[in-house]
Length: 228
Ligand SMILES: *[C@@H]1O[C@H](CO)[C@@H](O)[C@H](O)[C@H]1NC(C)=O
Ligand SMILES: *[C@@H]1O[C@H](CO)[C@@H](O)[C@H](O)[C@H]1NC(C)=O
Ligand SMILES: *[C@@H]1O[C@H](CO)[C@@H](O)[C@H](O)[C@H]1NC(C)=O
Image 1 (cartoon, rainbow, N blue to C red):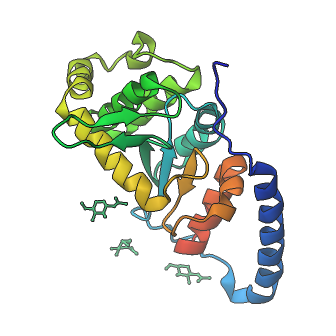
Image 2 (image 1 turned 60 degrees about the vertical axis):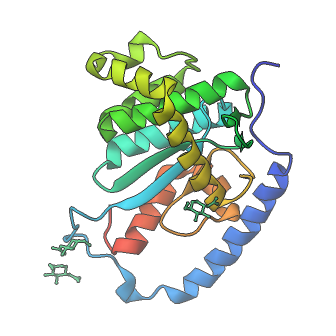
């Protein structure tokens, strides 16, 4: 099987639990929202950005679908409100051995490790907006190589990215991604995992995955008291 699924078997349960939680949340909130809670539409602070971090894997089909159909279109609309970060690691792990170079293992094989490192170098070497466009392009059609089409117009970055991905710099980035991902949850129960400025919440993941833009707007409005 070429496209190994990144969904764990707990998914149906997750949906049920999420529905139950959303229901109780909804019931709890209706009482709390008074007439004063209306956000002030006239005062959006241009510097207010809600952090969003995406923990993903380069060859994970769920990550591809999410980035292509949910995240990237939303980011294009809300780039002034979203502080987006990508962490390409997912369920990978690093095997450390004394007196040896560390070994990388990825859920979809060695090629995925190479690609995760490559994505890391793209994100490191290019300005964020351009880097996001290239990563979204690579994820869009299961692009398994650093293809010309995604780098069109960004040729000047290419050498630096390739050099980074083949050397110590790329390996160092990958270890940083490992550390960040492990700090969320070790191992991640689901890839991709989406986190905003709140601590990771397992029960919200399904909602983020299926209704990213709606949830982003809700969170933004709640945090900054401003209507998008
Ligand atoms: C919204 O913000 C503006 C500018 O700060 C202020 O003048 C106005 O009174 C506010 N409106 C509400 C309903 O808070
Ligand atoms: C906008 O937000 C930034 C950071 O929170 C703050 O420093 C600044 O004073 C705010 N500006 C206005 C006009 O509220
Ligand atoms: C990440 O790195 C920091 C600093 O080296 C360390 O204190 C922390 O324990 C690491 N976190 C994990 C989950 O490995």
